[in-house]
Amino acid sequence: MTGSFDKDAGQLCYTHPMARLPGILFAFIYLSAPIFAETVLIVPFYNSSNSKNINWIGESISEDMGEALSANGILRVAADERRAAMLSMGILAGARLTQASVLELAINSSAGVAVHGEYSLTAPGQEGQRLRVVASVVDIRQMRRVARLDESGPLAELSRIQSRLAYKLLQSLRPGSALSEEAFLATRPGIRLDAMENHIRGLMATDTEQQIRYFSTAARLAPDYPEPNLRLGLYQLERKDYRAAAGWLSKVGPGALRAREAAFYLALCRHQLGEFQAARDLLEKVASEAPLNEVYNNLGAVQARLDQESALDSFAKAIEADPADPAAYFNAGYFLWRKGRFDEAMKRLNEVLERTPDDEAALLLLERCEDRQGPQSGDPRTERQERLKTRYDESGWLMLKQFFTSKPEVN
Image (cartoon, rainbow, N blue to C red):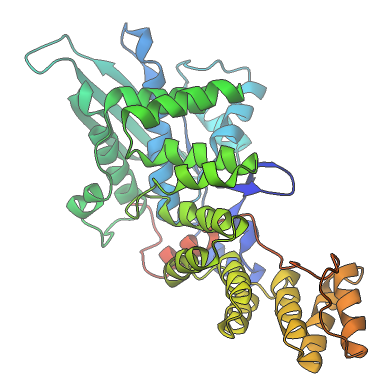
């Protein structure tokens, strides 16, 4: 699942990517390739060493694998959902799970594939302590292990070990993937160990201020580390400190796994700061890679602020991506009304009311169109009424993209 910022609710939200897919496409994918469409549960790996101060590594392996799956269009059980399922079963954090517990946890999480394992440290040698990680990939429906993954290396190179494991996991779920291991690893630069530890401890913390302290430390230790920069940006966005949020989000480089997500939220900040040209440039780049409803809707909104006719093309693409969403219809109608194109505006506003009959703003604009009355300076009911999308979720789109370009089977 993909985390997203809900401006109205003032919190980070999680949306199941299947909810973004038209029913007929979901049925086609599920019936044609059931294992491909299964959600993957990744259980925190068990620390079988005597060093309890590295218990965080189990969560780190799970998180890194999960991010790799999400980036490649494979559904995974979100960490918060997995923790809730473990809590309901009375499973303590860091506990070694039996096969039966993994099976029950997967079923309770509605997952069809489970990944679990353990890690251990060797005695210090010339290159320091070495870490070994062993993982099992289990097909829950067929009750069989479909892959065993094994990686080791110096503890200081944990991020590289995790990346190699993530690649092996992707290959077990997507045999014959077009992406080579070398190309995959090139997209995942190594991160220093202490920065990773602070980031993961931030994810595991339950207190918001404690989370911010951990993420801030991780970002200070590794300024180019995308994940804590993104998290800090989203926290500031939640607080509506758009300038501070923009500062953090702009540090997420274009090669990061969640670069498009960061750019989307950065564009939202730029819009709120009145930096419409910068917001447009960001959203045009995202739209060229991920043709999502929320991206085209917001792109149209900033183009409208710049008084560009191309806003209508963007709104049309947003409608094409999600015909049920009234936001782009409203934005198109609002733009046309401001341009004095009343008949065209009425068509779009009526389409809004077909979807949301009680939309007071649309009703007001429709009345103004019928009276052939354009904008009036100082009227708060009709000024700055563009409707921005505040949630970014590319999971469903990635799943569709991967389905049509990959072999949907488990080896």
